[in-house]
Amino acid sequence: MQYSSGFLLGLSTGVICLAYCGPVLLPYLMGEGKSISRNIGSVSLFLMGRLLAYLIVALVAGIIGSTLLQPSRTKTVFIAIVYMLLAVMLVLYGFHRFREVCLGRINHTASFSRIRQWSLLFALAGGFATGLNFCPPFLLAITGAMETGNVAGSLLFFLMFFLGTSIYFIPMPFVGFFRRQQVLRIIGKFAAILAGIIYMYNGMIMLLNAITSKSHI
Amino acid sequence: MKKQTVYTTQGSIWKSIMLTLPMILLILLFIAGGPPDLSTPEKSLSFLFTFSFLTLLFFLILYTGRTDRYRAWGFVALALFFALTFIVNLIRARGTMTFSQETLLACEIPFCHIVTTMILIPIAITNSIIFPGSIIGGFASIASMLVIVVGVSLALGRGFCSWGCFYGGWDDGTSRILRKPKIKKINPVFRWLSFAVLLIIALVSAMSLNPVYCDWLCPFKTVTEFEKITSFTVLMKTVVFLSLFIGLVIILPVLTGKRIQCATFCPMGALLALTNKINPFDVRINKDSCSSCEKCINACPTLSLSKEGVAAGSPSITCMKCGKCIDTCSKQAIHYHIKGTPVDKNYSWARNLFLYPAFLLLVVFLGGPMQSGIIMLINLIKNGSLIN
Image (cartoon, rainbow over all chains, first blue to last red; front, side, top):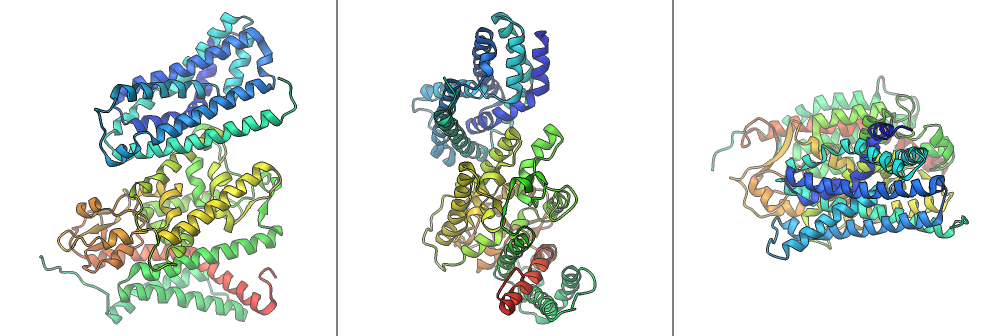
């Protein structure tokens, strides 16, 4: 398979990737209430997290080939744990500085740099966790990567796939256009908590299925 | 204070009767749907009772000047009669309140207005409707409900939530059970929670191509239809929606005196709140008359009024136009208003112009279920069964 077809695959299925990432990325951007230019930084970090996840999967696909697509307890447990960690992060993020957001003032003096670091880490980790969604386009990308027959080809295929899907993320920073609407920050925080509950449920169900399933590791 | 040159129907019986006459014609038109069917005593009785009830409500709203007090009677009746007739008809057709996989595959699930919040993004992405209902055929088709939602949004905005929603009457009713609420302080920030629910269910429905709110969260499955329990997952879903019904529709509204489900959880309410900006009616507060007693803030069932809102002269975007704050205000400082007209003039004109479409919506939704429900109740008394 041509590497460029990875880009076309990403381009044709990127909306689905956006739909998968939306419940994490949109509440985060709304909750932060940053300007468009700063949102570009946040979305870039989120995309870097996704790219990292893609490249890891590409590497594994290149090494172990079709085994990656087989049902595996280890794989399920790993993704379940990642989802549950993401859920914890989303809930913590939702409650983090919630009081300040509701009251409409932010204490800039209180360990601002630490808050900023935590916020940046959230974007990166959120991108990584959502990048591991085994959605239909992602499974197609794995198949395409395996068809290249080598690790370098697999990595390149996934890189192209990532670029194709990333185009759909271009409008996301423009949430910052509404940053003066304090209420959007409140909604973003609430939405992060709700998304956290959904990811926690998904993670727990996956873990439960992995524990009770009869498949080998 | 400026002298207000307004006319009022309050206390004027002839003016109220004259203004009720057009509504009588509309009620007759909408509840009969043609020549009235008076072929049996049961049908005649149900028709006459429904007609009298609706006419009396509208007259009392005009004559007493109290909107919410009499609206609530009709609105609660709508919720109860809708649930009764829906469940009985379902049992007649399927023999059970539950639906199975076969029902889903046959696309026979009635489409309710709340589903609108989940199908819009998937329509844009996939050009398909992610709901197992009928597009134009059968009971509660997708097309007819979408037309109603668009029409009502343009005419009344979130007024639908207090005048036309066949679920809203549940927590409107339960929130009135206690005269004095046990929980008095609720952080008004929770009124934005429904917007977060809207955002998340719209995105997750697009992600999973499945209407997740209907599938997992809708508390009103308790009083309509729900999935047959065939697995642990379905059991979980049942526990979730039952808990939400008990918590958000019964316990919290009783304790707080607020419409908690509608105000904090319903995604359709959030979507309709956005349309509050584009319809002609709103609620305004005359700052000259306002004594800042804050009775309206405490009375608002949807947390839409705050000190800041009162100072600014209008409730928040989440206002459902139920009229409770208007009824509560002893200074008559709060009133319905038509956008683009002066705020401190023609209160009664604005009120009457709002009441016609709003009450007509109630008539359209309540007329059918009430007549059918009364016949069912008569059958219950006569035969001991609602079904036969």
